[in-house]
Length: 638
Image 1 (spheres, rainbow, N blue to C red):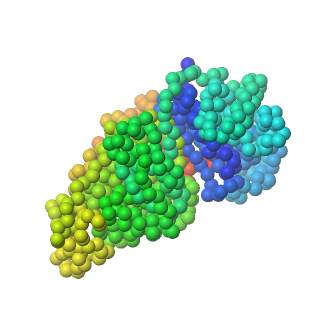
Image 2: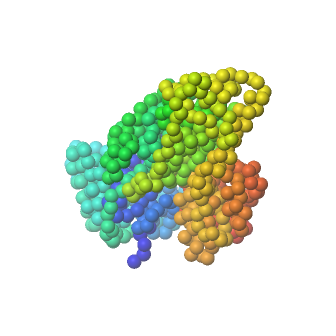
Image 3: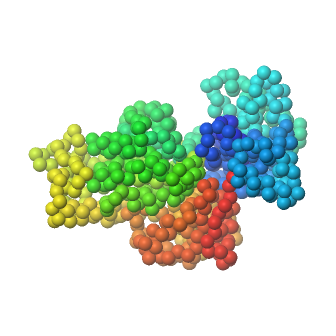
């Protein structure tokens, strides 16, 4: 029997329950013992604009998506138009047959530019500019239309007094899972998992599930007759935002500040809503560390990002583990205060979620274009750590690590992630707390003349905190006691002391936490990348290996100070280097050239804000191997 590998998209209006449908799908498959991974794509609009969830289901671990999809579920009149190119031979298109005569011109939520592209494509092929025309366009590509009257099914299941639009998301999810052969019991348990506390909602949706499965059964079109049953196990379903929040709590977070901004704010909302965490390991961890059961985290929504980082720095001055979360525009406002933390060697953590720029840019779309900005933020010269994560298990551990780094090296840390990770849904097994080490450093007792900024060989001075030590803190240059000074010799000595930390950091952070080599040690091609691209790159390795192409990935996590020697060691052995990033200027490759003197010539880049997929990466690699291109730009996504 072939391995299960299903990609599906559920598309509909923002505010139309797309997130709930996605949760039902992922939870149902998880309960059924399958692995799943998904990304949410949405406009910066509260309600009405097109939103969709792309999810992949496999029997083995999955950390990437692919096009074309096996199943397209259209919950509105816009989805058939914007996803016309996302299907192929034998893809199933599930759509509302009551909308087939809707004209493209009538879809008011669609952007004019997108509407023009779709209209030109349909007209060029001789198709009507209606949903019927879009469905015919996909059918001629080999896809299989599956029309359903959403209204009739809802009325038949619940009677005429329940609004059909309210149940379109559940109906679409139920029909989808019936089509791919997931037994109804798992779909129902997925719904109970999402709506469990709302008895009436669960009862109504149970009727919807029965109606959806019965419809598929009687209309004799199942993509898979029935998925094989698999042993179920308890797992977490986590987004990147939630993973960072959990990691921070485990790491001892006590003060989180923020000003609402997409996609960072979801982390703080999660922390606000969960001042109590319960896991199977929670009781034991709580007794040992007092961080899991009752978190004791204070979450403050500040009036702006300047206040947010100022509050976080103030908390860190007392010895409290503090952080603030933001995205590009907010991080811009934090630059001056970040320099203050660097000058005064304050261990504060800033979690930076990248989104499309510049300015407001693409506020709800993916990007990796803030790397150079994070490294260079703040005027003058000072040491900060810029650290990247690429998936949910890693993000949990890294959220603890960056607190350790900040405190150990007495520097601000920018923990940089991308929107894809923030808004991806991962299935995660029980968190392995044995891999997580919380490190705290002893604060010396106060003396009459406490030298908070004492000159040392490694650049690390005695740590001091307000409330425990008497010391002076200023934004100006200062002496070992913290008093303001412009004496040139003291300035030279103090700058040298602070800058020594770069070598101390590179020496003391374990190599695997700086750079990781993933894949074949003696590879034909070497990918260089970071962040959430890790999952899609490693997924493509299997496909390349089947064709006799050995590949590996130089996966960089520590961006500043840059691990030049380690990166050079790995890249110097490479036969063909390809840099893959979600930005226009290949910023990591620029860092490599600056710090290692290695000039990378081949690139696979994506900067339209949408998620990177297996097929794009595979095609890009093949184009470069076959010398058809040296700069491949990925353009997939609606």
